[in-house]
Length: 236
Image 1 (cartoon, rainbow, N blue to C red):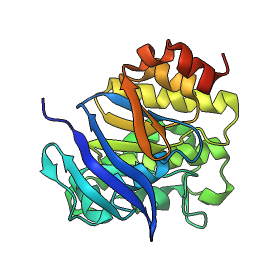
Image 2 (image 1 turned 90 degrees about the vertical axis):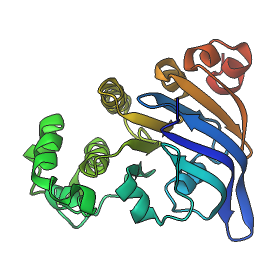
Image 3 (image 1 turned 135 degrees about the vertical axis):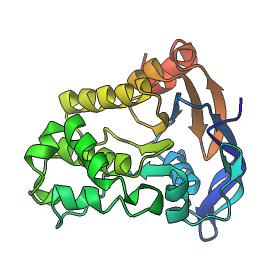
Image 4 (image 1 turned 90 degrees about the horizontal axis):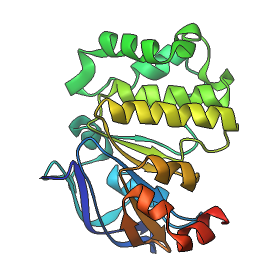
């Protein structure tokens, strides 16, 4: 089976600083794949490179088609959409404006009204606040908005970078429920997340990163049951 998203020999960084080194991974269609590792392991840089936002060398393919020469907006047009760390909503725009601005790609421009209705159906809280400035939302509401904004672009592969960062536990659980629901509906997801226990418990497959490289991989629950990973990442 051709991977929905794959990277081969991918190295990436900022200027002369190489952060990610020779990474090879594959995300099967319709699966949730996790990137786990400590802070500074290179997870966000890797996601940025896959989205075209970080300079990289190596091969990136979407359904077997090369993405290497494509700019970030062109990768969005192809279906690779990133929800960045820290949400990064447009604080001065309303909720609805934040959502509509994501429907810029020609592939989805004609579906904006339909997709907006679907996002509001999925996130009723956003519908209630559609005319409210995004910067006045709570952290959890902003995360809903960031995910909803990505869904406006009709992703074939959704890249999630630390979606529960700085959220209260009850809100973080709600975000994990959203991710599980999207996966259940067939969306392909690659997610970097600090909550290793919950992430591995729900992931179909996982890659463990350290110092910018992939040091291990396997089924999420299989890694979760490993004593060395429990000691290193779960404090068990």
